[in-house]
Image (cartoon, rainbow over all chains, first blue to last red; front, side, top):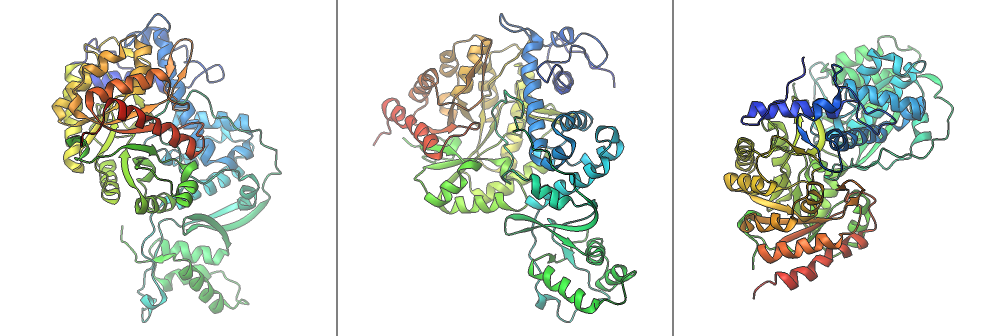
Length: 309
Length: 282
């Protein structure tokens, strides 16, 4: 898309849109010189000062681009701060400097598309997959920890439907019964022990993010992170969930993972069990284990009425 | 004197912003506070801790909603999904009025999460007022529009900020949340008289007032909400309530947040001004 020209006057909604696009382009350009200054050039190489000077009025203390830089810095500091809060484990895996470069690249490629900062990390997994250069040589670990941390964002405030109780299921035919699972529940299959690693780096309050109307005048400041041993390679199946208002995660077996994810996809209980136990060790007492899974899940309130998409 | 129709005929005094670091203190100590202002977006979620905390607060206190992402000044239309979530929250809190900013914040689906300044022209005022009207019709609660702090002005502007604000609120038939700190910050950044601003807006539409602190840099002031309210802002507050009467007032403190008692004590300073400059008639 070619850069819009600045309308000389704002006499219509289209003029307004054009001006807002122009200011957006300038503001969303990554900052330079340790995140303190506006990029010197527009996206097409024209001088930034010339472009911004078309719409921002200077005063006797600040040039047009210096005035715009106040907004650009606030934008970048705010969204970087949000990623710092939501992905402390990823930051620890990559190291502070590399995480900062990764976060800038991610946000430049995937600017916020939601009114809430809560959704800022929702494209981080595809980004890691498409741009492994930002996480190499730790891309596999980075992907697993990012997946785990994004699951916690979802588990924190996704909806909780009325849970089903044992009595609700009495007399149901497992060949026809399709159970819903709570929207806050996320199941993951990972190749590294990210749960142990996360516990080691966890240092944040799980409060809500700081939506407010103030202007940020400083970049995210974090204490130096003591370097930890990277998570060990280990195939794991995890359930990230919420109990009361706190986010928890627990390891589950491969078979339980297959069962619950099949139920999530809308399979009947019978079909889900078949998928789960297809390659199961015949030496195990699966009837007893399956009963335990269902009992534990019901106690945690994981089952709810299924809502067809 | 009761408050005006733009805050739903209620009579609210001094409020405090509900912020995460104070949750435990408030729920445990249950301090006497006239009302809490919540940032709507923090509670426009489907479940979890935010809503549980809110419900606990609502059992004890009156709550007023303040938003940061309706973006009345966007060229783009209002976000219907956002409005639906906001309406659900309005029903939950029973807020007597709600506020959001006279600003823009996103274009073509990319969000700045900031309160960006508007070009002050008649066409923009009409467009903005129409969006405020649409939101007010949908939400079925009075809306107060808040002036923002700004650090940039557009060559294309043809009105003063107070002329623009007045035009929008008159056309939309809505209230104003007059942020006197924002007026002061902008007056220093753009070299206008802040008293001329407050004297020239429709006073009968002032439904709420914000006071806050800011940070002074050599070249500009920044609206950081991380300091006590400075004297020039209190002076402007005194003038505003002299003109607009006894008005619901809130202290904003969003960064480097001190103890709840310290924030509350700073907020209660406004009481002295209210008694002196806008006494409630018997």
